[in-house]
Image (tube, rainbow, N blue to C red; front, side):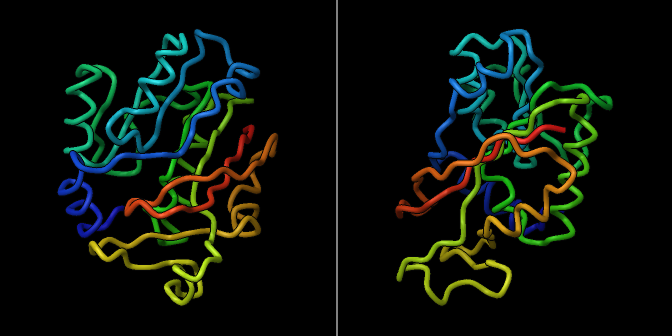
Length: 205
């Protein structure tokens, strides 16, 4: 699902990048208990795992396809919290989690079919009634981004990797198998430090 170009990129920059999508802990606390099983899919260097544990959640795990990002996570979280996976399928049984966090992951999967495969895997991992908490980049409308997208919102970063930004209408089509609970826009930074708008969704299986 992730191309060799993407793998090489993330392993190369794993110790340099900082992620900025804000985690709404108050929102999660409305729907989850401290004993809820939470999976951070595409956990990167473990920022979200650390924030969730810092807020009192007791059962948080992460997976990522970048071995270097997982190594970075292990350096701060310990070896039991983040796992490296070689494919979209995570090493957990069906209906294992009360919540899956998917922060800035779809942007790293530019192919529509691959995105759908990822969503099917998350659907498999969630318990009935489980929550999917998404934060990802919207299609930007500023002059800096004008002309950089193809017809699907895909673009090539100056550093060489391929990414995708999304319209809300497209995301609604992508997640038709989930019940939409909340939607909000939040300001974030891109990997190169530019201001951007992201969309955050809380969905229910």
